[in-house]
Length: 160
Ligand code: UDP
Ligand code: MG
Image (cartoon, rainbow, N blue to C red; front, side, top):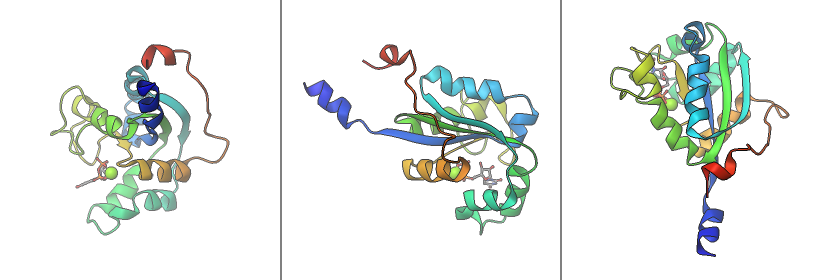
């Protein structure tokens, strides 16, 4: 009974993960998707997308006073990105750990940025920083009908 109650209390979160234009140009899409897939999270949304300027500005609105903001918008809109929604218990914090520090030179080996990038301005991937922002960003980048609810066959082998 108690484990069932505790499981029921475990919050399923969602996070917005995006392969940035450098990750797409460098052929890292499959590698990056694999990191989350192998971990055991559930993919609920996926598309290749050319981001318009206004969407990039809305996505990064909290950073609009930063000196690097114009270059950040230029970077994110410079080519197609791969938009993803991932779901799972603890997925937001875990995805941030899999991604690693913002500055790839400080990111630990074994993380996506630590293994695959060398500069903050070309750090190959985005991940939401809170469950609230996960929901906000998925709603921003995906239309209704682009998110799929499904049960992976491996689920009983991932969670007792
Ligand atoms: N960024 C940058 N210069 C900086 C800080 C951030 O170009 O000094 C870019 C970088 O692409 C980063 C994004 O802005 O991923 C968003 O910054 P944030 O601090 O939210 O980092 P993140 O959450 O992506 O690790
Ligand atoms: Mg951030």
